[in-house]
Amino acid sequence: HLLTPESAVDIQARLGSDIAMAFDECPAFPATEDQACSSMELSLRWAARSRRAHDVLQDKRAPAALFGIVQGGVYPHLRRRSAGGLKAIGFDGYAIGGLAVGESARERTEMLACTVDELPSGCPRYLMGVGKPEDILEAVAHGIDMFDCVIPTRNARTGFLYTRAGLIRIRNSRYKDDPRPLDAGCGCYACQHYSRAYLRHLDQCGEILGARLNTIHNLYYYQQLMRGLRNAIAEDRLQSFTEDFYATRSSNGV
Image (cartoon, rainbow, N blue to C red; front, side, top):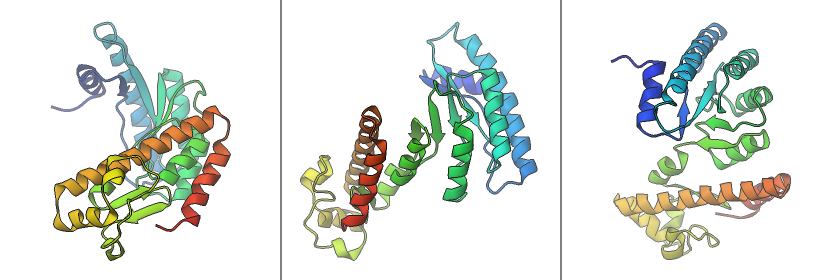
């Protein structure tokens, strides 16, 4: 059956979602301005239908928040139009979609800057599909509250592990006889019980335990990063937190 804004909202309600997303279209990158505009306008029409369908369901099922999704490619005026249209419809939170799909870091930062200013400051702002630790820090500095990304788990399965000192590629031969944990200051199960050499051995053997331990570590790292960011914001020291983050990564070897 063809998926519609109404059926998409209904599926999320049946799943018991606490946060439901409006139905949208994410155009392929690169997209011309005309393509991005047509797609953005379609997403706005779908957003209005999603809002109406969601409101009807709220009378029948447990309440949930509904987020609209800003689109518009890498064109600032389209991003602003999309944000304005979503605000006019009214949502519980606002997501920024269509980024981290191939555009440069500069383009992504520019789209964030021009979009966040258009969104209500009192509502959650969610950047979809991002990302690497440094991407998260930059987005938080621009006013983003929420993220989702496959990077921690996908990279764990392929041997890319995040530490405070930087990225470890556990498949490199330099870790063959390395008795150290991934990060001596990390409290995760993998770092408390296993060495870099053993994690590399598991990866080389294709042993599923390696993927599990790597995933545990990366998720723990991300949780600690987000906890640190929340505390830094609450204590009004986000800038110093960011400076310390980059200083630690640049001054320590991995």
